[in-house]
Image (cartoon, rainbow, N blue to C red; front, top):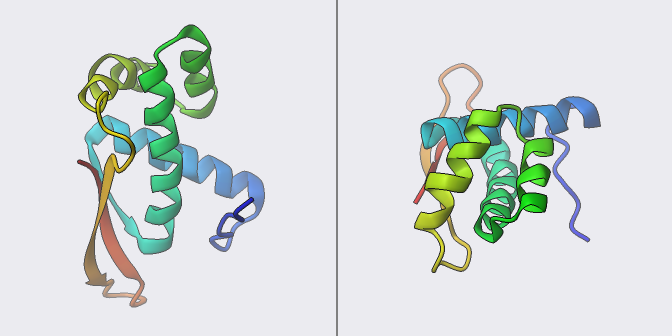
Length: 113
């Protein structure tokens, strides 16, 4: 089983941060973050889209347990997932923007394809 990146946080902080990033991604369609966070967020977001493609009640409840806003889950199941019904993975794109001014961390944009 692949190990998650630690991202300099304890497990509770890391898990909630990833949940918030996934929720923000589905709310706005794109987010700007550092490259390691984007790669971890991509993993979780693609799993959520795969759940939404199933579309049953159990999948909806699993998505509600992970994401922080119910309206975003509704949007995911009714608008986002049908767009990817015939696509097998690869629902997101990472575009690198270069180093950040303050700490030279690699910044990128994570967006839905």
